[in-house]
Length: 254
Ligand code: PGA
Image (cartoon, rainbow, N blue to C red):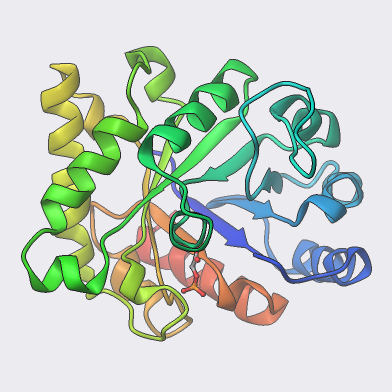
């Protein structure tokens, strides 16, 4: 059985006190499955870690640099993330790819560095609207998967969580239809099965992300191929996020 997960990607929102207030609220509202990972800004990581103690919620970061230490002004290493308590890290988010020009090769170095430091990558892939319109979705996703996960062995691959996030759906209010998302998730699994020459694609958790809301999570969650969600805007409000969590739980009957 694949793990069902809901990730909150707070992006560049929430001060330490705002983050702590959210966690206090969330602790009252959710218990058990599906698993929740809170990806907080760097500045709040260690405070949030403290607040998450003993309640089953997990902590993630939103980025890292691939070196362990050195003269890299402004960067944060995997060692530092671990020290602050992060067990997961988002890598390859489209905002990093588009705004900060991160390439598949650069992203691959980050995935390797995270794995070497026992931090589970939440590895994001997704096509732009022009790719979809030109029927290039599968080509783009395949390239992101093969280049982003290059040189990662099968055992480590199982520790990676993949997030399919069509760029045209992020922060736009336009989510992919459940069937559309499901089709790409199946394509990702097939690509992994073919590349690694076994059934690894069937065991990997693949989340959908892009304008997840209270009114679309059930439809997405009902799809067998979709193992949960990566939530941006709708993860900032505790009531909204916990309602998304409850609906995901119902749709997966867990
Ligand atoms: P969104 O963001 O839910 O606001 O569309 C998702 C993401 O960026 O991970």
